[in-house]
Length: 269
Image 1 (cartoon, rainbow, N blue to C red):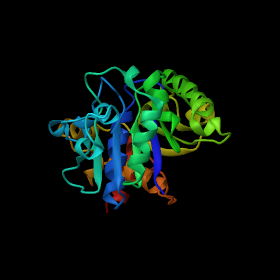
Image 2: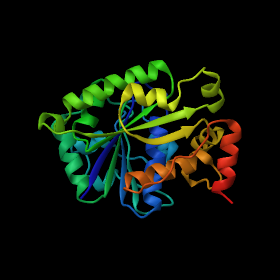
Image 3: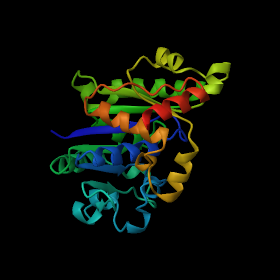
């Protein structure tokens, strides 16, 4: 049965679209049929991270407004045949989204894909509510900063109150991805530790991602870092994918810069 996973955050700039792209590619690499849908209407960038910006003809709004059929708007990934992408509109406003049209779109996608990843706009405006309303699971991306954690706490509350599952008296499964961790700052007390973040937000952890310059270069090249066998952040995303699929895998230990390098060497011996 298809699963709808919304990747969201309380504020912009925390790496939400990067997480969406890497998880989508990771699921595709292990044989899952997956579609990544960009719901950041007017501010799309998931297409660039996936390296598919030049293939866009129609977008998600065109599909929902009946200007094209779904198959015309879906873009197949260059390297993974079972990974597809549905871009956001660059010219429309988030207010154009309609809850029932979003549901119709998702139901149509469920017929074809195992996993439907919804890249939510940052913040708690209309576009955000449309992406969390029909979610089976939400992955909340946060950086270890007080402002990011505070905003994410609010997002968690909204998911628990306003999703379709909440209306039915059920819970959306929620997991936390802590991104851009700098171990040396955590050790010096200048950055919140993972334990600090988990105590505040009180939802299960599914991923720890260190600050990694390879993520920037991968984004610029349109090749998500999960493709890079020598990237520790790529390895961390692979482990998130494994956990989504129900596998129990340990978290990479990067308590210090030396810890990162030692763990990295053990991983790729």
